[in-house]
Amino acid sequence: MSTPASTAQGRWSDTTCLICGAATGHLPTCAASNPDATNHLTQTLPDGTTRTWTVAGIRYTATEARRQAITALMPTMTWVHTIDQPSLPFSTGALVNEIVPQPGIGRRLARIGYHPLATLRVPDCGCTDLWRCRCDFDDHPHAHAHPDLWADYPLLALVLRWSHGWGHLWLLDIGTGAVVIADDYITAPIPAGATKACAMGWCHRCPGSTRPAPGQTHRPPCGCSCHTQPPCGSNSGDREKGTTGES
Ligand SMILES: [Zn+2]
Ligand SMILES: [Zn+2]
Ligand SMILES: [Zn+2]
Ligand SMILES: [Zn+2]
Image (cartoon, rainbow, N blue to C red; front, top):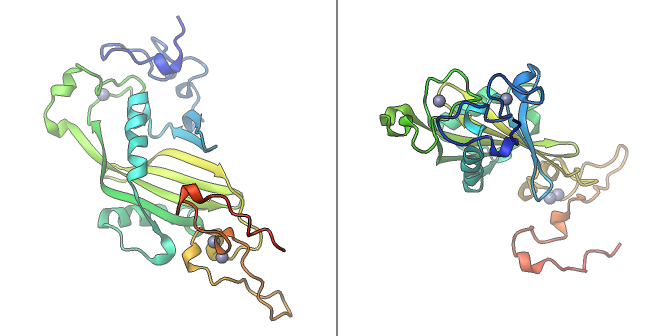
């Protein structure tokens, strides 16, 4: 019997794989069958973002309910631009310092998202097969367990500037370190002629013009649309313009 991944959940007493639905072992298509798999699920969001849920985070993301609990926290984050040298809560700063030296992160890190109260409640269970753990299901005996057997982990986000898009790394602070649970990517090329500040999304810090070409003194104006358009989101009903096309 094959069960679609999205309905492979059922009751707490079930023992099927939460991802592939296999009663024992895993289907060949299941990420658990592939030692090289880094993601167990890939989604396309309405805005075009590709969201991948990592195998490393399977314990926290194997069910629709767990993923929804995480996505519900995402809009509550406080965002800070790294150029502003923000002062972060101690544990957040320590985790960021641990992650940032990893190759490809440091110079791309544009923003950090955190929220001390945006925590995810997860069962701190002893399950060894995380692809089958249902300790957070309704009526599971664990639901009545001592509060110490439930953990509240804060969500953290790192926004990375790639040359053709933006990446969001979503992490869970599990106390002993950070686990990357989801990885978002949306295509958004750096605007032509943008300064470093505007390329990184630090429009409030843009000097307005870029370095002169060799042998020149004229500083070309920054190509980012923030200098000719109101910041997006300032008023969503105010989108039509028509005054920026002159050249
Ligand atoms: Zn499976
Ligand atoms: Zn469990
Ligand atoms: Zn800008
Ligand atoms: Zn600019």
